Length: 403
Image (cartoon, rainbow, N blue to C red; front, top):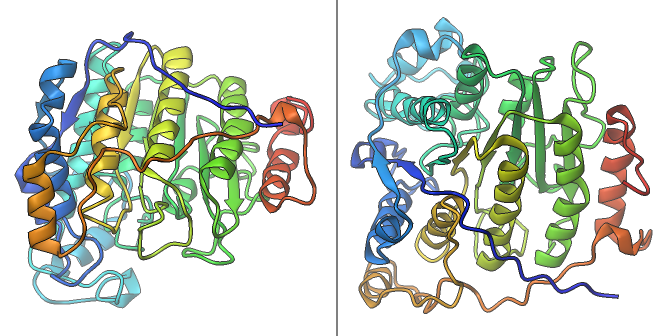
């Protein structure tokens, strides 16, 4: 049996704050590197051309470059100094710098510190503006570790935002990562901290970097049941992805009872992305954001910071996905049938030589079986879901079969 779902959010959220300015585009490894900051600029341009911020009553906030003391909250002083030296042309691969994934460039420290500062700004805004979600689509550098760069990520802004929330008196923060890659850096930083639950849905580490994020990674000795990992098979489409999300994330979120949600919305799970093996649509990614928004409304009174992350089909996919994220965070999702402005389409076609999308969706028919319809052991997606439920649910007081 199939359950067809059409979700429409309420207008409970009065607005959204987007932390973004053009200075954030300085985070550019090279002209040929997959992590191209043009995706940020194009997202801002699409928001403007669709008049999204005016329609939802949103606002922009400028970023800032984080201080050394702020960086030291997450990263070791030795690593920060290595990043500064890298900006002067001195790469040190012992710190993950100067590799194929993380080539060095002038002012790498300042550029990375600005993305980090943008998420710190986001955390401050979440704390100060009750019920107003914040989006930093330039953030989500979830692979960076305390002492090394990894996976295109220099400084871990998502971890910094979480720690800022905790140091400001928040007792529980839930981190939800829906990038195609496992959120290993954030998980590692908080693996032994019971105040933070990290939840990551991703393509299995058996087929994709960073090779981690398996169901048995459930937290350190002082924080059992604080990490939840859903390692999904390559080739998964919207129906499997949304079945997995809804079968796991709402239940563990309600069991954990967070005061704030920080989410990472890498859109590299899209079928056009060149670096992953998932087959999601813009429609499915929009729906995932809506599901997270529901949880923020229900559990945190909309105290929600959403970041960007991966996404390497920079023209056709990323701007649409993150424009939807902003509208969803504001409580006023854009219709997937909304036409992409002709000016934007012309730019994509001329600049990148690709067929520009005509609409803000991919004409996907969203449907998925709810977990209440039963477990199918012959389905690799269901096997992945059950592996996570068996590892994560009992310690949270949940039944792997029925909750």
